[in-house]
Image (cartoon, rainbow, N blue to C red):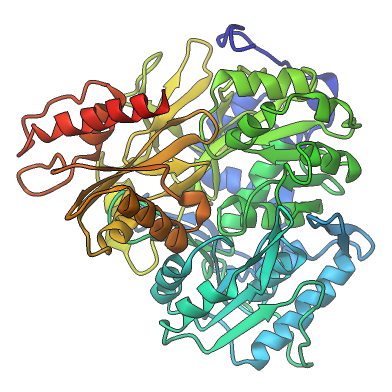
Length: 634
């Protein structure tokens, strides 16, 4: 399958998509004749485009805006819906009571459902309970839950009272939880006793208890018990009249240096962009059923919740492992719940492809009309396996790439354009994307930096209490241009391809993590003097983490202990695959460890100019470690 040409179109739009899609409806509303015309106008006049999106989504304002977009502080700090009152919970809960809002299937096969009426009632009950604890506008509240009904209710209730949700990956260890709660000075944490994974109970309270014992700002810890709704007292469930630009959610992601970044989003930002992209690229609308295999702590968890509810869709949650109790669980789940859009990652598909396509072919997937895909770049074989073997060349893969900082996509496929394997048909509407050289000049049919030249409503409102770091991260390299950190290419047909990260950030099984955060855990061991971690290609996960340590007494026992330390602090999915011991790490004269050089040397690639290195001989040890690893595998 991988031998099929990647430059040719694998799928072309059907008549149904052309006539009935949400994107087609928006074109008719906006008066534009084609997607290309729409995109040109959307980036040329973002205020016009955003006003049309708000009207299309029927976003409910408690007080109207005076101005759609104000750029008094420059492209870096746009202000949207100036003067408006907007609590996004109202737009999420406006649908008829008897419509199905959320379905959750647990690993044991049990199913729970909430209609929009029931979801509204639970949201009001939780809102009153949270207010009764003294929580309210501007208070940060951590949410450490798997993808369950309670996760949906929690986000809506926190929005309703004007609090700031801080979702946390359900598999985090105590150190990662503590860092994030401490950074936002969280007043409360909502967590669960644990959850089942592969029929084994994963107890979470030890890590949570260790974390909150070191967070002096925390006043309340609410523990969800499975199949038992919280017993809230009656109280004030009124809607907090938030401003459109009031904080809604802080989602943490990691960079290449320093502490994790708290990405700040507002009521009129992240949810609007999520719903826009879900409508235009995943063709979700009223009564559509959409599922995404994700976690609340990753961007796609809140994206799924806000986006689907604003659109009147049904969120279909899979709790547990998608390949347990058998490799066909994901496909039987999609068939059982008549899922229309199924979101996956390349890592998951690589895993499922190893079991063959018979598990999928035995299921009725007639309701499935789209695959969504995000998290990391594809390689050809798994892409073709999903499209040809599972989807029978009928179901398009809506490749979707952006980030937490963007509230969704920069590039995506859409139902009105043909699709190339592993690629993207175009930038998302409203995204003034480009590929540029280091001077900001456009690059075509060659690899360049993925850049954005204009504002969009889902743009991060900075890093939590760290505006300078935000500017340094995205806006400092080329004046007036957002540099995203991806290598991208536009081919002769105008289709886009992502070629990986241009910075040092790791993506392990689709989960982004900063090397500095892991290195801090490694050097916390008294035996470790220095550490560096890199991501290397992995057939199953896409990228695997490999660590290099300068240690006092290196050995296999220490390597195992270090891997365990990282797993305990960051969660098992982020456990390093290997630890190598060296006497020195490649560093510049000012002491900066050159991860780029480490990675290139380990993979046998050209490490580039080593003139800046204080100790170029350290490269040889990295190369020797790579050779030893290959010999060990043989």
